Image 1: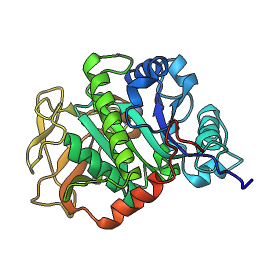
Image 2: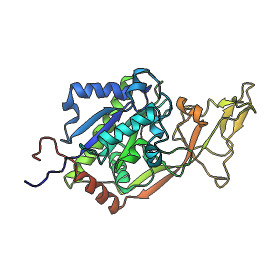
Image 3: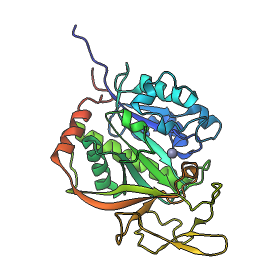
Image 4: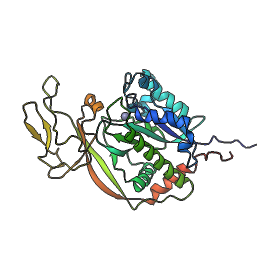
Amino acid sequence: MSPISAPAKVLVVAGTHGNERNAPWLLEHWRRHPEGLQRHGLDLELVIGNPAAHARNRRYLERDLNRCFAADLLADVSQDGADLQRARELVASHGPEAEAPCLVAIDLHSTTSAMGNSLVVYGRRPADLALAAGIQGRLGLPIYLHEADAAQTGFLVERWPCGLVIEVGPVPQGVIQAQICRQTQLGVEAALAVLAAAQQGALRLPAELVVHRHLGSLDLPRHADGTPKACLHPALQHRDWQPLHPGDPVFADPGGTTLGFEPPPGLEGQPVWPVFVNEAAYGEKGIALSLTRRECWPVSAAWSSALSTVASKLAQRGAPL
Ligand SMILES: [Zn+2]
């Protein structure tokens, strides 16, 4: 008999951040009712990203799990800790080289920001862009293209050959809301539909992909001792994805003084599109909001073929090995 290579699965991760409760709750539902995600026939691996943090309703224990996946950090034996160990476990058990490999990772998050139902893509891997374009073509979701940010690296999906984040909000940390679960479910179903179409040679992508390309982030103005001098201006709260022009209100101090948007060098005179506005978990990272530029990119045939190559290696549930 010739050796049979293990069929590859799609990894669906919920609870990479332990205080984001909607996707893990949904995942428990899918475990009880797997038919809910089997319409497209793909073999799925459903995993709670950080069970220890989830049990404590905390984002992480010692280190943000979704910043633990840089290859050099994973390989650095001098670095340890529960979250990093969990990252290594996930790669060992479900990574592309695992005994039961996964080739695509869909990582489900929620946010306190008014991002709506949205996608986060890391860098410009062609298969990721094709998957994002396919989902955008079906649901019209906005896409945050995160790249060239030396302060934020090591995202989970980057360790799999193809993957993206479905990011839904606003919802407080620790709270389950029906509409957040519904939007998450729709995002996952669309992602699986695109992968199944790619697998069957029936991938249809829109002509253009609209991305919001990361430019940088703004921190709150701070006193010398690091405490915030001002908070987010109420006019900007819940205004994710809406253009921000020079002089528009960004911060307000307790005395009622408004601080207007001053574009960073290189961006003078142009609007930017804020994302992750006042996200609760990003205070510790010194991020009050991130700035993006909205761009329209032609969808490339090379993206489709990259996604089709990955999808052709995915197992079909019930298909003979
Ligand atoms: Zn998260």
